[in-house]
Picture 1 (cartoon, helix red, strand yellow):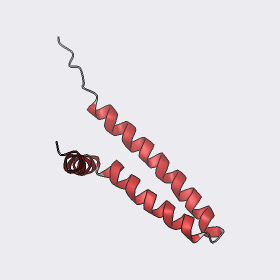
Picture 2: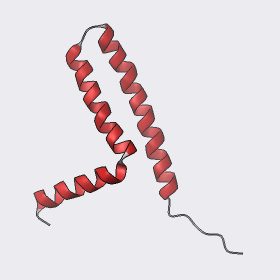
Picture 3: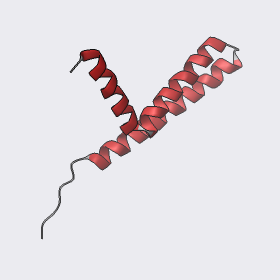
Picture 4: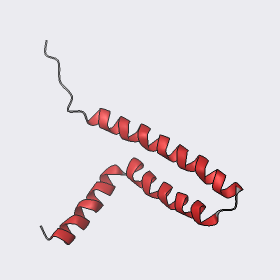
Length: 77
């Protein structure tokens, strides 16, 4: 009986999802604090950061493709 070894894709996906969700929760809690203090600039910055993090967490393949395409255009490789 052979045991198939995983290449770690499932673990990577799980770690990215858990870490990303924890980061989003931290951003949401901090954003509520900024809203309560009426710190609109910080609230907007947290919202934008949350959108970017959510893009990397929930669409990681698309984000990787976009960053690869940008790097290819910048580096010319």
